[in-house]
Image 1 (cartoon, rainbow, N blue to C red):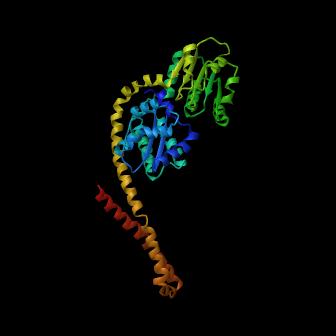
Image 2 (image 1 turned 30 degrees about the vertical axis):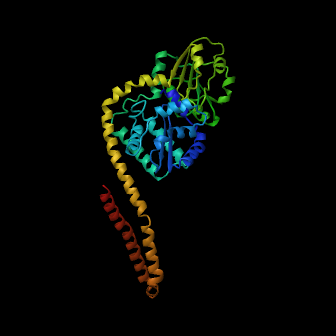
Image 3 (image 1 turned 90 degrees about the vertical axis):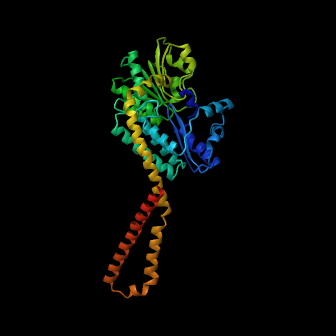
Length: 396
């Protein structure tokens, strides 16, 4: 299945909370996480029910009600499934970039973290996914620090730039940036760093576009103003989160302003922003995610020797997470202990030994209070620590 098809599964950020919350409720998931990048869409959920894999079609129908039956079948048959340790190992592998289109690409760690934060803020996640993704991020950082998996980064941005260099585009080329998200922001910075300076930005949210425009020292407009742009272009850099082709044939013709020279379009959106009929009708150097995916396969060969080291780190991390889960289960089971100790102290002071304490002088009361507080802390921390060690030892 191509990344273009996968792009049909993309859900715009503004719509995720409503649609994913409904899915969580309908299927009675305890926790839910949704990740959508340029070449993957993943759904991670926590449930006590078994055999959830058989519900793939129902999940797809619920989350994507506009899909036809044949689309549901195609996606269901092409889906990859993980559960238990396999799911944890997969999450670690994705963030560590060994299960990515670009092996060693650091950008994935930001995408994973941002996706988790959004799901958390939307009320979709809980304690288990909190622990999981904290551990996933920590492991990914360790991978990038202790291995050479990313010493020669070949990201989507750098791959696109290498293709651009082959075209020999002049530094004063007119560049239209459509979309000011993470990928286009990185690409814009990259181009500016290498001497390009003639930018114009179009973005759905003008304020966000103006932030990038300030950095690139150019103008920014709402994306609705594209149809009115009359200054022509040499390069279009497009990466929006739209679920349709942003650049239609009529819009492209208008942007050309009668120019018949071959143009370059770097379209790294999923689904692609450029209507495919434009490529057939006009002279276009079209650099797409599908194209970049093909040439990126070489990364696995170049960085293959480091993958083994990463797998070792992930293997250790997998065992660590099992311990983290057990430790957390003990903490939850024993969370009532501190309150019980406090209640015993309160009863002792205010009821059982009330008369004796009232008969003490102020100095004795202060000393007694210090003794009680000291013992309270020790009776909470000491026994709890010992109990945790015993329970964890027996659990292994």
